[in-house]
Image (tube, rainbow, N blue to C red; front, side, top):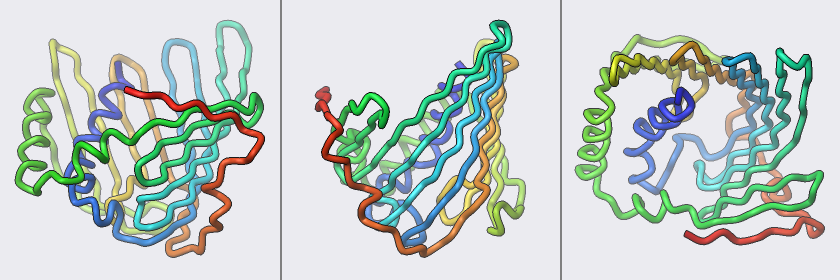
Length: 215
């Protein structure tokens, strides 16, 4: 449940930028290293990502390494995956099994023609539905960048969820969320703005079998 609210809040704050369509981020390109730690129910998941961003966010590639520590079993599982956003398409594949999927970016299609007024109206409706209050907390530095800090608190059926976001030029540099004892923390460790990105980072290797998923 906490992951649902975590991504819902991120989506909530992204609506105005998705609808704008011209530039998702206020920088053309970047190289990013990020660490995400998820804890709860006896499981700790640590995800290390290398992220390559191009064309103001219309194209991005995330190379992930995930380690899942199951404390009760004293067991650690590890896997790698690649996630590519390329305009109209979202592509995910496993470099080990050499299999993956691609699907249309339905969010892009839904919001690209939405006016700023309609986007704000939708964001407000979602915020009200989640009984969410937001508060601006000033600015803090993450990975050498001055970030705007926002706190969002939701309370539904007695369940309190908090999400704190640090944003730089519309990009989430750091996020922290907590709900029902479960915690998620994302933090950018390296951020190189306007880095020249090799086109090969967005290219699917020829030996990867991709299946299209339709909705």
